[in-house]
Image 1 (tube, rainbow, N blue to C red):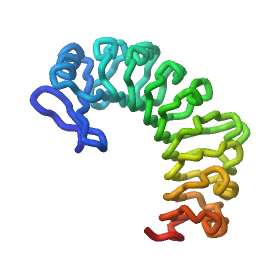
Image 2: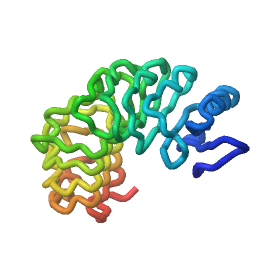
Image 3: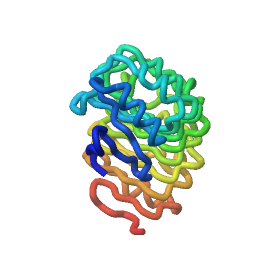
Image 4: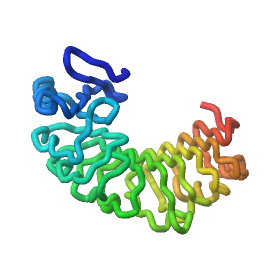
Length: 234
Protein backbone atom coordinates (compact mmCIF):
# COMPACT_ATOMS: atom_id res chain seq x y z
CA UNK A 1 0.00 0.00 0.00
CA UNK A 2 1.21 3.59 -0.54
CA UNK A 3 2.43 5.74 2.33
CA UNK A 4 -0.52 7.37 4.07
CA UNK A 5 -1.64 8.63 7.45
CA UNK A 6 -3.58 6.68 10.00
CA UNK A 7 -4.47 9.26 12.62
CA UNK A 8 -1.34 11.29 13.28
CA UNK A 9 1.17 8.78 11.97
CA UNK A 10 2.60 7.76 8.60
CA UNK A 11 2.22 4.09 7.77
CA UNK A 12 3.18 1.77 4.94
CA UNK A 13 3.65 -1.96 4.44
CA UNK A 14 6.24 -4.16 2.77
CA UNK A 15 5.49 -6.71 0.04
CA UNK A 16 4.49 -9.26 2.66
CA UNK A 17 1.99 -6.88 4.25
CA UNK A 18 4.06 -6.18 7.37
CA UNK A 19 3.37 -2.84 9.09
CA UNK A 20 5.96 -0.05 8.75
CA UNK A 21 5.76 3.22 10.70
CA UNK A 22 7.20 6.49 9.37
CA UNK A 23 9.71 8.46 11.44
CA UNK A 24 9.14 12.25 11.44
CA UNK A 25 11.62 14.62 13.07
CA UNK A 26 9.01 16.99 14.50
CA UNK A 27 7.34 14.16 16.42
CA UNK A 28 10.11 11.61 16.65
CA UNK A 29 9.42 10.33 20.16
CA UNK A 30 5.73 10.01 19.37
CA UNK A 31 6.57 8.01 16.22
CA UNK A 32 8.80 5.70 18.25
CA UNK A 33 6.02 5.19 20.78
CA UNK A 34 3.54 4.40 17.98
CA UNK A 35 5.89 1.83 16.46
CA UNK A 36 6.19 0.17 19.85
CA UNK A 37 2.46 0.33 20.57
CA UNK A 38 1.54 -1.30 17.27
CA UNK A 39 4.45 -3.78 17.32
CA UNK A 40 5.54 -2.50 13.89
CA UNK A 41 7.66 -4.81 11.77
CA UNK A 42 9.80 -1.89 10.65
CA UNK A 43 10.26 1.85 10.21
CA UNK A 44 10.98 4.19 7.31
CA UNK A 45 12.07 7.77 6.79
CA UNK A 46 12.55 10.28 3.99
CA UNK A 47 13.02 14.08 3.97
CA UNK A 48 9.88 14.64 1.91
CA UNK A 49 7.96 12.74 4.59
CA UNK A 50 9.44 14.72 7.46
CA UNK A 51 12.61 12.83 8.42
CA UNK A 52 15.54 15.27 8.72
CA UNK A 53 17.81 13.57 11.25
CA UNK A 54 21.54 13.19 10.63
CA UNK A 55 21.76 9.99 12.62
CA UNK A 56 19.71 6.87 13.34
CA UNK A 57 19.77 7.14 17.11
CA UNK A 58 15.98 6.75 17.11
CA UNK A 59 16.52 3.06 16.39
CA UNK A 60 18.10 2.53 19.80
CA UNK A 61 14.60 2.51 21.32
CA UNK A 62 13.27 0.12 18.65
CA UNK A 63 15.55 -2.84 19.10
CA UNK A 64 12.84 -5.36 18.15
CA UNK A 65 12.08 -4.06 14.64
CA UNK A 66 12.98 -6.24 11.66
CA UNK A 67 13.09 -3.74 8.78
CA UNK A 68 14.62 -0.31 8.09
CA UNK A 69 14.07 1.75 4.95
CA UNK A 70 15.52 5.28 4.80
CA UNK A 71 15.96 6.91 1.39
CA UNK A 72 17.32 10.23 0.11
CA UNK A 73 18.71 10.82 3.59
CA UNK A 74 21.94 12.60 4.53
CA UNK A 75 23.33 10.76 7.53
CA UNK A 76 26.51 11.40 9.48
CA UNK A 77 26.07 8.55 11.96
CA UNK A 78 24.47 5.11 11.56
CA UNK A 79 25.50 3.50 14.86
CA UNK A 80 21.83 3.11 15.77
CA UNK A 81 21.58 0.36 13.15
CA UNK A 82 23.79 -1.93 15.17
CA UNK A 83 21.31 -1.95 18.05
CA UNK A 84 18.92 -3.97 15.87
CA UNK A 85 19.99 -7.47 16.78
CA UNK A 86 17.19 -9.15 14.79
CA UNK A 87 17.19 -6.98 11.66
CA UNK A 88 16.06 -8.88 8.56
CA UNK A 89 15.53 -6.23 5.88
CA UNK A 90 17.90 -3.30 5.12
CA UNK A 91 17.67 -0.28 2.87
CA UNK A 92 19.54 2.93 3.77
CA UNK A 93 20.70 5.36 1.08
CA UNK A 94 22.17 7.50 -0.29
CA UNK A 95 24.56 9.64 1.76
CA UNK A 96 25.72 7.70 4.80
CA UNK A 97 28.86 6.36 6.49
CA UNK A 98 30.05 2.91 5.41
CA UNK A 99 28.10 -0.05 6.76
CA UNK A 100 29.69 -3.06 8.43
CA UNK A 101 27.14 -5.68 7.41
CA UNK A 102 28.98 -8.26 9.47
CA UNK A 103 27.50 -6.56 12.54
CA UNK A 104 24.00 -7.30 11.23
CA UNK A 105 24.20 -11.10 10.91
CA UNK A 106 20.43 -11.75 10.81
CA UNK A 107 19.88 -9.87 7.54
CA UNK A 108 17.87 -11.76 4.92
CA UNK A 109 17.16 -8.99 2.40
CA UNK A 110 19.22 -5.94 1.37
CA UNK A 111 18.71 -3.11 -1.08
CA UNK A 112 22.32 -1.99 -1.34
CA UNK A 113 23.21 1.39 -2.78
CA UNK A 114 26.81 0.53 -3.50
CA UNK A 115 29.57 2.03 -1.39
CA UNK A 116 33.06 0.63 -1.92
CA UNK A 117 33.82 1.16 1.77
CA UNK A 118 30.95 -1.04 2.97
CA UNK A 119 32.15 -4.39 4.24
CA UNK A 120 31.02 -7.71 5.68
CA UNK A 121 28.47 -8.81 3.08
CA UNK A 122 30.22 -12.13 2.62
CA UNK A 123 29.64 -12.92 6.31
CA UNK A 124 25.83 -12.85 5.99
CA UNK A 125 24.97 -16.54 6.02
CA UNK A 126 21.21 -15.89 6.18
CA UNK A 127 21.05 -13.43 3.29
CA UNK A 128 18.61 -14.56 0.62
CA UNK A 129 17.82 -11.45 -1.43
CA UNK A 130 20.25 -8.77 -2.60
CA UNK A 131 19.52 -5.83 -4.89
CA UNK A 132 22.61 -3.81 -5.85
CA UNK A 133 22.05 -0.25 -7.12
CA UNK A 134 24.42 2.26 -8.71
CA UNK A 135 27.59 0.17 -8.51
CA UNK A 136 30.31 2.11 -10.31
CA UNK A 137 33.35 -0.13 -10.18
CA UNK A 138 36.87 0.92 -11.14
CA UNK A 139 37.56 -2.28 -13.10
CA UNK A 140 34.00 -2.48 -14.49
CA UNK A 141 33.92 -6.06 -13.22
CA UNK A 142 32.66 -7.68 -10.01
CA UNK A 143 36.03 -9.06 -8.98
CA UNK A 144 36.32 -6.53 -6.15
CA UNK A 145 32.85 -7.32 -4.75
CA UNK A 146 32.58 -10.32 -2.42
CA UNK A 147 29.06 -11.69 -2.06
CA UNK A 148 27.72 -14.56 0.05
CA UNK A 149 27.07 -17.72 -1.92
CA UNK A 150 23.79 -18.43 -0.09
CA UNK A 151 21.81 -15.92 -2.22
CA UNK A 152 18.53 -17.01 -3.80
CA UNK A 153 17.62 -13.71 -5.51
CA UNK A 154 20.17 -11.28 -7.02
CA UNK A 155 19.54 -8.02 -8.86
CA UNK A 156 21.75 -5.38 -10.47
CA UNK A 157 20.38 -1.93 -11.31
CA UNK A 158 22.45 0.82 -12.96
CA UNK A 159 25.88 -0.78 -12.85
CA UNK A 160 28.87 -0.09 -15.11
CA UNK A 161 29.91 -3.75 -15.28
CA UNK A 162 30.93 -5.06 -18.72
CA UNK A 163 30.56 -8.75 -17.85
CA UNK A 164 29.64 -11.13 -15.05
CA UNK A 165 33.28 -11.95 -14.41
CA UNK A 166 33.98 -12.05 -10.69
CA UNK A 167 30.71 -13.60 -9.58
CA UNK A 168 31.12 -16.92 -7.73
CA UNK A 169 28.84 -19.91 -8.13
CA UNK A 170 25.54 -19.42 -6.33
CA UNK A 171 24.15 -22.95 -5.84
CA UNK A 172 20.86 -21.68 -4.37
CA UNK A 173 20.21 -18.79 -6.77
CA UNK A 174 16.74 -19.06 -8.33
CA UNK A 175 16.11 -15.53 -9.61
CA UNK A 176 18.40 -12.99 -11.26
CA UNK A 177 17.57 -9.60 -12.76
CA UNK A 178 19.84 -7.11 -14.54
CA UNK A 179 18.45 -3.67 -15.35
CA UNK A 180 19.94 -0.60 -17.02
CA UNK A 181 23.53 -1.82 -17.21
CA UNK A 182 24.40 -0.14 -20.51
CA UNK A 183 28.05 -1.27 -20.52
CA UNK A 184 27.21 -4.95 -20.09
CA UNK A 185 28.43 -6.82 -23.16
CA UNK A 186 27.00 -10.25 -22.40
CA UNK A 187 25.93 -12.76 -19.79
CA UNK A 188 28.48 -15.44 -20.63
CA UNK A 189 29.29 -17.61 -17.64
CA UNK A 190 25.81 -17.48 -16.16
CA UNK A 191 25.21 -21.27 -16.45
CA UNK A 192 28.22 -21.83 -14.18
CA UNK A 193 27.37 -18.95 -11.84
CA UNK A 194 23.74 -19.99 -11.31
CA UNK A 195 23.32 -23.65 -12.34
CA UNK A 196 19.81 -23.87 -10.84
CA UNK A 197 18.45 -20.50 -11.97
CA UNK A 198 14.70 -20.49 -12.69
CA UNK A 199 13.88 -16.87 -13.52
CA UNK A 200 16.06 -14.45 -15.53
CA UNK A 201 15.36 -10.87 -16.64
CA UNK A 202 17.80 -8.68 -18.55
CA UNK A 203 16.36 -5.29 -19.51
CA UNK A 204 17.71 -2.02 -20.90
CA UNK A 205 21.16 -3.50 -21.43
CA UNK A 206 21.54 -2.73 -25.12
CA UNK A 207 24.93 -4.38 -25.72
CA UNK A 208 23.84 -7.83 -24.57
CA UNK A 209 23.57 -10.06 -27.65
CA UNK A 210 24.23 -13.56 -26.31
CA UNK A 211 20.98 -14.03 -24.37
CA UNK A 212 19.49 -16.77 -26.54
CA UNK A 213 22.76 -18.71 -26.64
CA UNK A 214 23.23 -18.60 -22.87
CA UNK A 215 19.60 -19.45 -22.10
CA UNK A 216 19.88 -22.61 -24.23
CA UNK A 217 22.58 -23.80 -21.83
CA UNK A 218 20.32 -23.46 -18.78
CA UNK A 219 17.68 -26.21 -18.65
CA UNK A 220 16.50 -25.18 -15.18
CA UNK A 221 15.07 -21.87 -16.45
CA UNK A 222 11.28 -21.57 -16.29
CA UNK A 223 11.19 -17.96 -17.47
CA UNK A 224 13.76 -15.83 -19.28
CA UNK A 225 13.36 -12.40 -20.83
CA UNK A 226 16.36 -10.73 -22.43
CA UNK A 227 15.96 -7.25 -23.90
CA UNK A 228 12.20 -7.68 -24.05
CA UNK A 229 12.33 -11.02 -25.86
CA UNK A 230 10.80 -13.89 -23.89
CA UNK A 231 13.05 -16.86 -24.50
CA UNK A 232 11.49 -19.26 -22.01
CA UNK A 233 7.81 -19.15 -21.09
CA UNK A 234 6.36 -20.26 -17.77
